[in-house]
Length: 298
Ligand SMILES: Nc1ncnc2c1ncn2[C@@H]1O[C@H](COP(=O)(O)OP(=O)(O)OP(=O)(O)O)[C@@H](O)[C@H]1O
Image 1 (cartoon, rainbow, N blue to C red):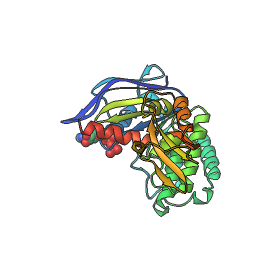
Image 2: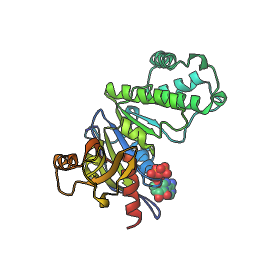
Image 3: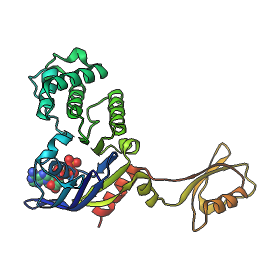
């Protein structure tokens, strides 16, 4: 287990930020940390990065209590980007790499490799303040991963990127996973969660309200309803199915109502030719919204 928290609690005065948070992030996966604004995600990330302390509870990394020696093993891309505006790209990267303990020659070699890989070598002497927002984000992303941290924490890594650059960053994250890096991805962008994450945890109002693999989470929210289209009707479709007809194709949704999918399909075949028979599986976005709203309404 790469990272585990046990009953983590944190309050700021009257504000409860984390309540008994238990998380297990296995080695080498991309773990999505999801939750609406104010859920407690940044608080969790700040604790892992040892910027603040929890009030109680435990954080274990590979079974060992979190301590200052772990700082060099963690790469952290904060949501509020923190680059020095007057510094040049190259110097900025060198500074971060040295902070994380790389030797000067190793740092220079890696910076060169990354700038060239990302086609950014011509930027090396530009000041941060002269870069576009997206360019600066790329510099910060590379600065975060230069020291090859086994644990990478990315807070909204796609914000500020155009689709092409977001794609490049996504591919880099997948490549890092392939090399064994464990990634914690905190984001509101559910499409990136579905594409990237192996497991997720949804936090709301300081508590974890669900977690698991994307597949297991989705399975637990299957409404067991099928979307069906038929043509060349052999007999009338019951009015209560509220079918809509377009160009001779009749479409409607039907719950399984205790039948197996095959039984339902067999029954439907007696009505006409099946054009479509597909289970309605909710997206992570739908699950997120549904769960968060149902808590707001008690
Ligand atoms: N420095 C602080 N002082 C007081 N309350 C705080 C502080 N930081 C966070 N909080 C409170 O703790 C709770 C959790 O906040 P946190 O920033 O961890 O949420 P978040 O999930 O990261 O939200 P967002 O998606 O908006 O960044 C909120 O109620 C917030 O108001």
